[in-house]
Amino acid sequence: MIERKPLSYPRLIWRLGLGWLALPLVFGVVFVAVALSSLAAYRALQRDGVLGQTEVIARNISRSRNSDGDETLTYYLTHSFRPEGYSDSVTTRQSVGRGLYMGTEVGSFLPVTYIWNQPERNTLDPKRGMFGVVFFGLAGAVALLVALGGTAWGWGRVASARRALLHGDVREARVTDIRKLPLRVNGRARYRITWQDAVGTTGKSLIARPDLALAQNVGAVIVIYVDLRTGRGWWQKQI
Image 1: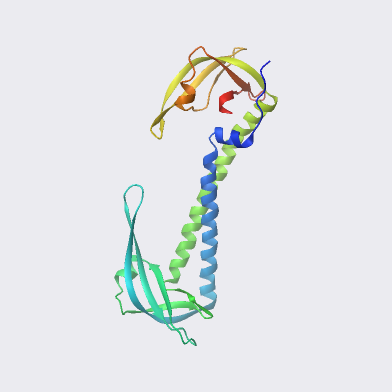
Image 2: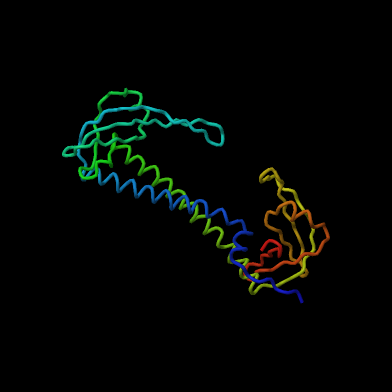
């Protein structure tokens, strides 16, 4: 009798290729949190904002490159103003749009909106705050929808593999083919194994790494777990 493999949810999720769902989930939560924070700041400026005048004291551009080598420019203005009722000036370095940056020189005076009792919370462009809310909110929503859709899709796999491990048939199967797929991950080819089990049912593996797939030969005997509800077979080494 073949010994049944114990169930481990972390191992199962990882081996079924569902670990990637953590990325859109984390990004979605972070982006939504940033959007909510930006929205709170925008509402505070709309509710408690006071309009004043500030002097531009410095201009600079930050250059960065992404993984494709494309350059991104971020424009900054440093400005200083004295809030009404305060004896000290407030100096802020703030990212601005290209149009505002190009149309401004050191020594220029610009309107500034600040919270009357927290003048360090200020902006040269109140509409830019709403742009951040929309951008991060949409990005977060898309990332969470991807995570939700991926989870719904992956749950069927997890449920089937779980049933197979806990209650399914444990069978021997003979490898009938090892096929190289038109897919590469990190420069390495991927494979799929097909088999016929002891009762004559055919099945196929998940996408497999070369070290796992090429360790087998056509005609080799492997162990599979069969989900009795769907009839799907799962290769022991992949769950």
